[in-house]
Image (cartoon, rainbow over all chains, first blue to last red; front, side):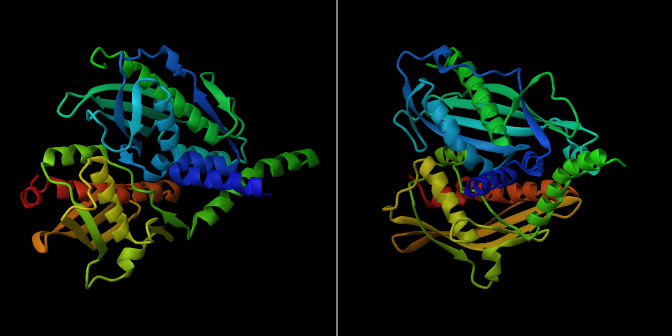
Amino acid sequence: MSRSISRFQTLLNLARAIPMLGLLALTGCASFYVDTATKEIPADAYKKPASPHPVQVVFEFQTKGVANARATQYLAPLVMEQIKGSGLFSELKTTPVEGGALLSVVLNNVPLTDDAFSKGFVTGMTFGLAGSQVSDGYVCTMKYIARPQAPAISSTARHAIHTVMGAKDGPANGTKMDSLDMAVKTMTRQVVSTALDELSRDPEFK
Amino acid sequence: MTARALMVLRRRSLPALAGMALVWLAGCAQLPLGEPTASFGNIGKAGMSGTAPVSVGPFRPSPGVSPALDKGLSVRSNTVVSPIDASFAQYLRQTLVTDLQAAGLYDPASPTRVSGFLTDSTLDVPLDTGHASLGARFVVVRLGKTVYDKELKASASWPSSFVGMEAIPTGVNQYAALYHMLVGKLLDDPDYRTANPK
């Protein structure tokens, strides 16, 4: 019973952080697919600097370009841990570091299908007989400033989560996830790894 | 309708009923803002400000404003609350501390202290255009002398939605973003920079 409550609480937290996907998950009639175009790049593949420096990291999740503090709070530990394990930096802090290096990571949720509610509503009204699909896009932008006043170098990666409701086959370009929580965390890991890899290959990243 | 068809219908209607239950649950809910995290933009502004590290004193509702202004905001029968001591004034204080810490400009031992008085806090999420505003009077005291005293305001408007599940979180995000915007206005203010040089 307590496990069920905990799972429900996780879903409620997700619903508050990423509302439309969370709502669909709570109704229990949705399946989540992580797009296959963006794959996780292992940290071993990054181009490592000869002598990594410490860095201050600032992470922000946005919804349509506006900071989403709850989702930021939810995903920050995951993102920080991933950057820590990247081997691109000697130390990670949320306060200024020696040398003044600063890395900003923004993950912006942009709806690719803007009528998610109406599609879900139709599915609900037909008791799932009329299936539908909505897609959420995610743009991860990293900006790295090696030292104060230095020009920023940046990298960008894109990803998507497809949500299928009712009687409809899953998308061909999606890998089915067991839960919304798994879909969001998988998407985040993959898109952050792609942006980190691009950043590591910038000639100015030393 | 056959018994099998009825069973299928019942099975498929359960998610819809769950959805309706959720909508019912969502009504009258308390929606706490997320804990303040540092703003990259404000770290940049602080770096450019050329100001000295400061300590941060008490923040409270401005005298004369309703205490309710500090406690919660009603949005389509939900209540937005602060996760910091259930006070929006404390949320503003924590946002300022977080941004200053991230910029290396927070020093609890500094003789220059910033305090604040919450003067405005609104969030309106109608069916067409949403609107939010936030205001505070910032007071900077150095060694007992007031060197800065000014009210700053931030506001936002955005296209709102008929659907509460979309409109409410959007409104909450827009409102929460005003806290960093207000801190950014302080860091940008030439009077503040003059009052608190490095």
